[in-house]
Image (tube, rainbow, N blue to C red; front, top):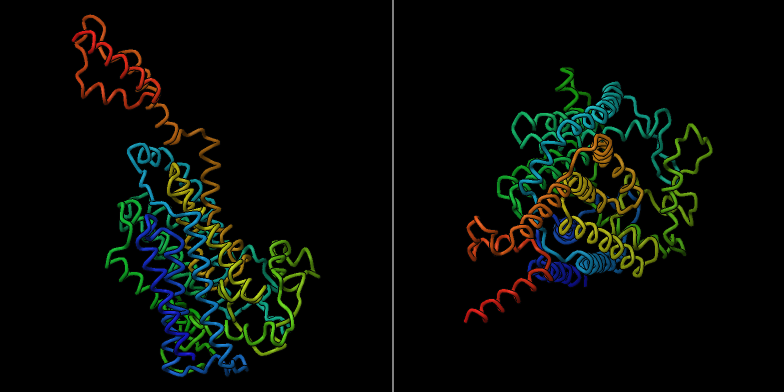
Length: 496
């Protein structure tokens, strides 16, 4: 039975991918492309590897054993989530991306460069301070996160959460530098430095997101819908670094940079087989949630865990009695096992909220929302701010699909887009003209010139030939073009 479910998962993935590949929106920038990559690896490829290798490390760590029905439910529910995400994302975002970076856009970026440098300076200094604080604490072995025994939620005990997360602004700043300075090698050095120092703190997601953002902007600038083999090879190297950092949480990087003896970091031993660890174990995490909810909890969460978005922004130093996790909780998963370090994934979060219906609702909502954001970017004016906003925000979901939580998107997204918003405010305050204004002015000028000259020039000026008339009249409103065509046809009839 389980083998049949795995085969159905492969078939479902192939059908969705095949249908998507024939749509005008099939490109590397569409959110469905990211979700297909996530789902294909975590819920299609890895379950087959886990079945062949008989992976049990997560089960031992989490102290549970899923039934055959639980395992089949996970495979089918994750496939249902893929179909829901794909359907709704294509309903709202099934349009081709229009590459609008013309001479007006290039001139716009040149005018905006000084204001961008101001935004980079402000956000970069704050981010660098945050990264330095976290690096020093990691080097000294000081860890401020304490995990609540009842809920498993990690909370800050002696440092502000905004200080911890502010370093994410460096990711966008590094992308801005690489993009504005035309991807020159020297312009990529800040991103390389960010990858090294962020890896040294034990964090991996942000530098993966930053690299993906820059790669997408590079493809957009070169009007390519998909990455080349070279870019995919760099992505594979970053994936290897992701796994390497996970083994010791950056201790090797810190030892190399600080030129000190490496300190061994003890990590849970889950087995020695490939991909058996927790980095990509969303299948086992989902199995635990199906095992617990609602079979043992007797209830779902009914999306109440999203209420954390209202309490989490308040620092605990200002609210000593702030609830740990969501202010409304129907159960605690740690009452049914030991799901330490578990991430829910998008379909897993949906299941915990409302079962099968929750999977469709949660995956469908995110598919519709992200498809709409893609559509707005793909057919919009694609200003410099829009380009940087989109390519800084969408790669966040490389991690968010794995976490599945709205709070993760808001917590990280606000810092990733902060440099873009500050850049927009500075440019607006300085009154820097944008590309759309220049395009509108050029169109108005062409129209005025066309109306003044007409299809035939005044006395003393050679008349326009047919090709020139067409070029001039392309800027005129449709009603004016129709009237001129009728006038020419009447003149031609009178001459005959």
